Length: 115
Image 1 (cartoon, rainbow, N blue to C red):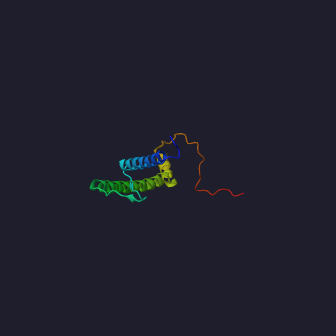
Image 2: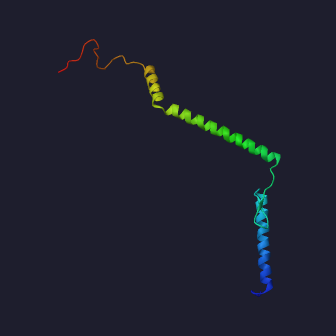
């Protein structure tokens, strides 16, 4: 093959057009905008089904966002110190008392000696 001849230039042009056609075929297959000869893009009009799916997708994202907000609030309630303190108090109420009390009497009727 002669590197300086017209066959080489025609081969370069053929490879360039082939790559452009392959690029547009791949873009069309995956739903991307197609590129025209002048570097602009042409968009496919949305079908009714595509618009319905986009609306449904938007609605589902809104539901997920609302559920995440609710989950954050519930996590704050559960991890709040006051909630665990209330659980600890309730668990102490359910604990049976020991018959032999080994605690120190408080003697609430008398004041402590201040020395």
